[in-house]
Image (cartoon, rainbow, N blue to C red):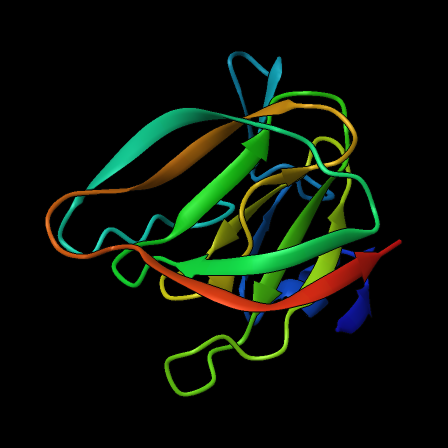
Length: 159
């Protein structure tokens, strides 16, 4: 069994897979008579001919070490996850290797930060740490096959 270490997420390390969803150092502009900072267009929704859907996913927790044995991808659209609670969570991603997942990477995502996975990026299932969590999810809804799941040899993820 392969073991990988979950590392703190950064925009640079995560860039091959998507975007981080967190306020920038400075807002794009002030709105609402100067009372509200707008951090505009942190990511885009890839819709592949479908519509953008907004959902809430409630996911059971895991604890580290965690054995990841399933990866999936959505070839027709992006998928954004924004936690609605105060806890950190885990994002598991993998490069594409000829239509199959390559070697997985695990990122520790701090509370209050989300990710936007590009269309076609292999990723693990939602993985809140230590207690159940709700996530706001923005992804593609529409015709066509937009889900591929692959069982992989388990990878143990450690802190």
